[in-house]
Length: 245
Image (cartoon, rainbow, N blue to C red):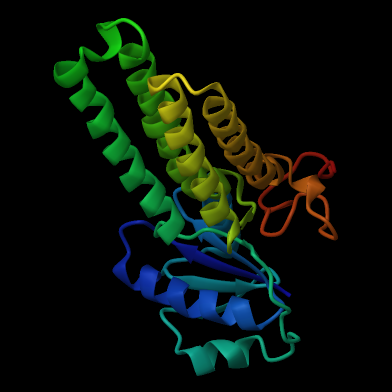
């Protein structure tokens, strides 16, 4: 059962509807996706179904309801769907996941620390570890964690494909934090073993991020999923030739 919730960033009730349907999607085995009417998929859906109101609920390409449903009403609409088994693979919605917000906040903290090194230690223009260590706080700290947070939220929305959440982002961020500080300490005190350990941990965090984001960009890699991945719209609107796989 394919369930699509058509929403918009400026719609306050859309956030309420999304929270309800995310709870339902965690309990029932439905192919659920939040579709922004500002994106091409959303515009095509609005045109095909001649939608006038949001939030709008579309089930198997049929308009079933508009407005905000209670959880009991939502469960009734998908009553034929079986109970879902636990999974960490989910579509992102309008609001940022907690892991995304924490990553962005961490990036701001690292930016402050890297900037503080400029007047305190001579920062990027000093010689030796006083230059290299703060430089990696900027790159492995600020830049990497900013990418973590924004990519986790934005790329799934742009592609319409789900991403691995659950414990994955926390393990990824933990490896990156620990790796960065060991890397920093190894450079600062010239401890080669500590430096190498930190580098390996930081690389592991980046590798885990690639593992999570790869199927978002190439959804055919989702195990057991159809080509295009859950939530991708195909064949909507007017085509001049049959859709290609």
